[in-house]
Amino acid sequence: MSGSFDRLSLLATFVRIVERGSISAAARDLGLSQASASRQLQALEARLDAVLLERTTHSLTLTEAGASCLADARALLDGWSTLEEQHTDDGAVRGALKVVAPVALGQGLLAEAAFSFQAGHPEVRFTWLLEDGDIRFAEIGCDLWIRIGAPKDDTLVVRELGRVERLVVAAPELLNGARGRGPERLSDLPCAALEQFEGVEIPLTDKKGRACAIRARAVLTTNNLFVALAAARAGRAFAVAPLWLVEADLRSGRLIDAAPGWRAPTLPVVAAFRPAAQRPKRLARFIEHIAQAVGAAA
Image (cartoon, rainbow, N blue to C red; front, side, top):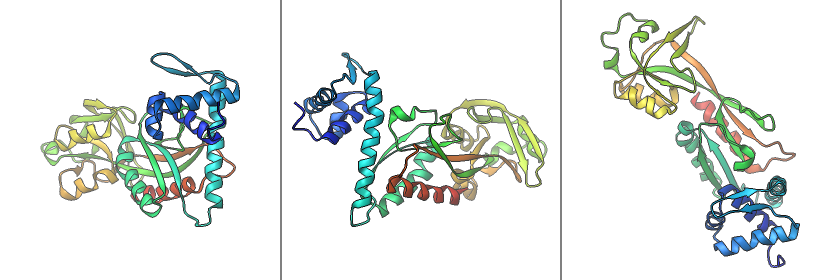
């Protein structure tokens, strides 16, 4: 039954079915008919003499054998891709990279870095997913997870790419009439608070190392930086934002530094990836590329 299928193709189809959660979605990704993708899954199960996925009308669930096969399949596919890179004479960086990145960085700074990397390496293909929360790295099957702060997964290699400078910003009209000149005046003003970081308790430090904490009056609490920044731009509240994201607003005067000389704690941007005896060139070079981008923006 499986003789007409390439073994790596069987594995690649199985992995894509697991990642997409359905045979039809995987088939679309791979340019196959649903029937062909289903036959490949059946062929792999026949070759291994094991049921890899439990099928119901509405879902697919990995069996114990399927979970074990998934890890091995990814390792084999990664190994083949690395072998291709190493032994192709033209020295080009090629192949697929699946990246999970935080929303703000992933649709701004990091996306621009990916585009510039792809311009220099046109045979690299990205799957680019945005997620601020935790992920199950093995289940998603990504090559690289970029996030704020180290993940709670000790099976991954973690590299800090840089730290993001953050400041308190507000529309000029919000500060009109605010009492005092120091950061303490912020306590009387409405705040758009990012719940995953400071929330309503905002620690600040000045260049001399002095520290203070602002107990903010939150009129909006959100897990999305763009929502908090929209409130600041509309003059409804102040917010804590990364410098790279608000530089244009500061230059135009749309927003101002609401606590000059004071900064919120910097946040580490890290890259997490699977340990490997030999990392694919495309992944190693892309990590170096984004490290430069984050370092330049920090």
